[in-house]
Image (cartoon, rainbow, N blue to C red):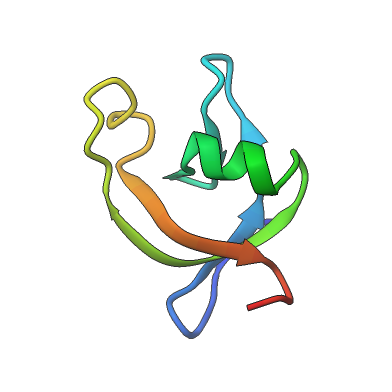
Length: 74
């Protein structure tokens, strides 16, 4: 279950939408990085995010994660 932590880090499960985008909560995840290092259902901690620069997915995911790790490995 996704939640905001006291440190401002978002923690949740990697999911994939019908367009093939990887996301966690309302955060878009980098496709290539996620594909290479994670699998669907992994629990991650998001450490840093920016405004989503992609006009294709910005409405669904206003923020894009720039730095995330498997939960417990941060």
